Amino acid sequence: DQQVKQNSPSLSVQEGRISILNCDYTNSMFDYFLWYKKYPAEGPTFLISISSIKDKNEDGRFTVFLNKSAKHLSLHIVPSQPGDSAVYFCAANGRGLSGNTPLVFGKGTRLSVIA
Amino acid sequence: NAGVTQTPKFQVLKTGQSMTLQCAQDMNHEYMSWYRQDPGMGLRLIHYSVGAGITDQGEVPNGYNVSRSTTEDFPLRLLSAAPSQTSVYFCASSDRDRKSSYEQYFGPGTRLTVT
Image (tube, rainbow over all chains, first blue to last red):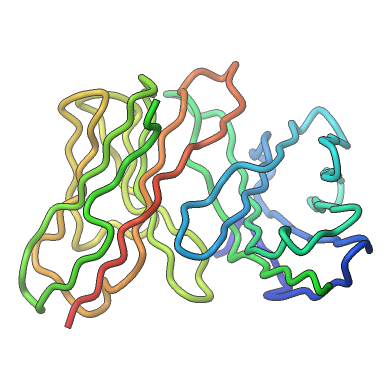
C-alpha cells in the first residue's frame, strides 16, 4: 500500500506561471516531509522540507504547504522557469526507536516548463 | 567533500552473475540507504543502515545483500542477477540525529542492465 502518493505523473506549465505539485500521504506517524528534484542521469537533490508542526515553509521561489488534517502537501514554484523542468519527488519520514525512519517516496511528477 | 560517490556508473550483467555496487560517503553520516528507481515506480528502498554493523531491510530487499563494516562504505551485493534487477540504483546518506533535517544526500546512481 502506497504511503506517499503523487497522483499526477506529469504537469506542463508556461514559463513565468505558477507550478503546483501535489502529494498525499496515509501514515499519521510521518512528521517530516521533503521535496526532491531529479534531473535525468543525476541523483535526486533536496529542494525543500517542512516539519509537521508547521503549515508553510518558503525558500525563494519554492513554497511547501502542509495540510495535516487532509494529509496533503503541495509544492508551489513561482515563477516557473525552464530550468525547473525535472521530476519532483515527495518524501516523508518520522522518528523510530533507533533514529530517523527511512524516507518513503512518492512515484514522482514530471514537470515541464514551456518557454 | 566528495559527498556520496557510487561506482560503477554503468554495468551490464548476464543472468546469474553476481556483482557489488559500491557506495562511499565522506560526511561522517551514520545513516545510509540503497534505493532503486524504475519507470513509474519512484524510488523504492532496498536496504538501509543506521550505523556501522547495523543493517535492515527496506521495501524490496530480495536478491540483494548489504553489510556495513565502516561508517563510510555501504556496498550492495547482487547475489545472482536477474532481468528484474535492471534498474537505476541510488545510494544515499544522512545524519541520524533528529536535530538534522532528515535530508538525505544522494549519489549519482548506477545504471544496471541484466540480460
